Image 1 (tube, one colour):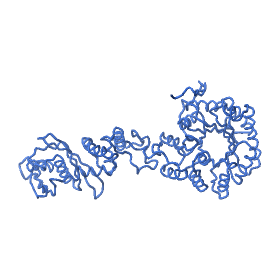
Image 2: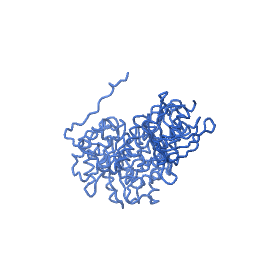
Image 3: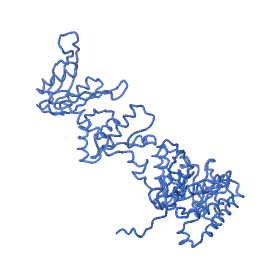
Image 4: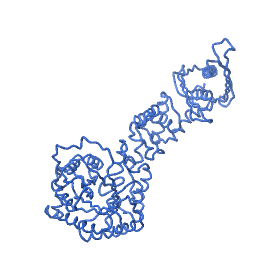
Length: 559
């Protein structure tokens, strides 16, 4: 039996004056990528220097202005990597590198050695403040924990005063989510005052959910409580660093932004320890889908995936939000039908805004225009098949034909599984366009009888065709070419046929345009109905081909 009694609920925040539920995200935060530090340390096969350089340059291309590049005082590889960036002048003037270090003098000294020659850097210090770690890891009282942070700040301040470039201090009370709020405020305020933070020289206070311990609303309460209790608030850039242990990292970050967070640290696709860091791309695309500029260059998601997978050696899940190969597909028949109708409605209305059921954004906006939107399997319905025929091949099937052709595709999918668009088109050719046996239409001549006869019919046709290879011909009159051909075929085949519906449309524009015609035909003797389809550069010829297609599908040519 699952022994749930071993676990206790983590405490919530008693904070009835919360204001974040009434707010909306209206602008992008300051984004800080920690792919090269927090993300890299979680890789089974960490990046080598050349991969780190490629990732660093790509993060800049994506628009990140703050990038945590590693822990140079604790790793020679990370130290050498940073030195390459500086000495090869690979850090743009508008990009700030961030380096992490513990509050120990030898590590802080080594950190400043690593950033020598850098015009601007964020020095990120931290120490754990949670009740659990104070007890079982450090065995320290609150005052001793505060002393570690204050002394670390003093050491950074002393070296920053001698540093020729600009130094910004970032402080993280690690395991903030497991720390009493009044103590978290006390230690952050001590660091803030020791640094001498001001509006002109602000400090970054980073409040991480090092381990997710509760629902996202509790994290938002913690962030807002801190935000509203800080003294000299204009001297603080309030940052968050959510993890994803409970699977709610994105929600935690978004609610934290509502609660006052101005800066978000995270990684591409959420790579990181355990279940990962917060996925910055997910948040950014969420903002984009709500009409808010994410201030990142994320239009080419396939390119982002390719570089990420190569450098990190981790595949992006096919159902990953926005980026997964399957996220813009629909197997369900009802979904496919809704997508079809939504796209059609947008085109007909000339809408400036994207509104399509089951597709929160236009896939083409993030570089996915060449991937299938609808895929067909045994669970698919008539709407999906019709959407494929229209979107991929330009055939706008009459509504009454949707079910008929969908049944053809379902039989194929039940036998072999998923059916590709090309396989759907091939089935369409075989079932309709190439349905030319036993009777095969060959030639047509149309004569206008208007004014030449007192007959009720104004059109005469001469039709040449083959029946099982034997050449045949007939003449007939009617109220137009289609009616005349129908009447002639009734005599030729000895059948009573009736055209129930007729539709046509252009397949493409220009001098080489072709037309598609659809005939819904009834065999009055058997009661059977079916559609026939014909294509030609001449609409009358396309219509006659559609009639012959329907006759063959009904089996009337076998008589």
